[in-house]
Length: 463
Image (cartoon, rainbow, N blue to C red; front, side):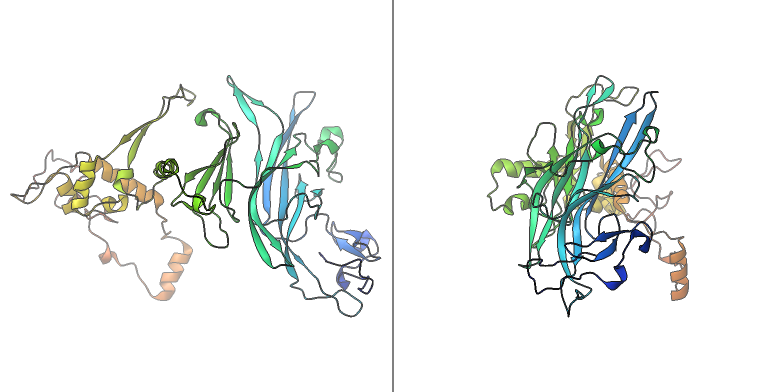
């Protein structure tokens, strides 16, 4: 239970908490609950030795290990829970705090850790004024490793990063969206090593394993990305496949006025600024009331080109050439990737003439459109050819299939629903082959315009 009281007011009652949670000793409590004094009162209540009920908090997991004297390795995963929204009961009647069960919502700023999910330790108390309470934020564990030859090294301690979120002021009834970034230095030693005498009853055996309650530092109060909550963030550790870069990706979220669909990246290795890797518009600039420069517009367009959807224009289809790999699938060198356009301006105009401008439209093009794009048409009509149109159509079909969400036709729900609703599978409604969409490749006599027909070296389609 979380209660709010004004201890400086002598007229307010000194008895708080609900009757069902009262206790005199820990044996009066259920399970692992402990009997503790509640605030600055004479009352005692049963308290779970863990974080209070909450929502929209953040969770991160750190992997710790210790090399024993016999060269064996003991590993331990530590769970961190930071902040979130709690419900505070704040009302008095007669001489006891009773109040409505709904209370009011408050963004909390405490932090907890556990190595087994049962025993929890609060390494940062609530209401410390060091770190703004928040919910809808994200947390990440960052390990500053680097590569030396073929050996991975660890440089420095792990860090817990906390990004953005929303803060609530219950007295002023307003919400503040955040775009700050905080970090907490984390020890890497396990808290409970059985060979050192740690038991399940005392999981915090090594006090040096606990983060400091005051070692919370703000990296920035104002990141380049607009303030938001309920976003997603991912840490990409350094490796040979990403040229040993430490990067964080921040995606989506919302604030009071809009939902975001952007992607931001931050390179930790050189303390660079956040870069908008994908912005469907100038949201990251407009939210800060700045006019985009020509360089920013060019950078935004080039970043957007790296992302595709089924409605992307055909001009976005490119071929990327990557460096060669050795036998261990590591890059032999780190030369920049090469990029080749799959269609030139003439090809794009040719496809537009038959109503094909997007990846989806090429994947679902009918037989007549495919034949025209291959240079065939009715007698006397000259059609312009896109030489690699069948290759492009195969890519488009694969791309649309990759992005599709397929219904499980054989699932129990599907069978039950159609049986109860009186529906039957209608085989006659299937689309014939060679017509794009859901149609199948065709045999001789009914063709999709690209699929080779067994036994025929050449097909005469003129006329």
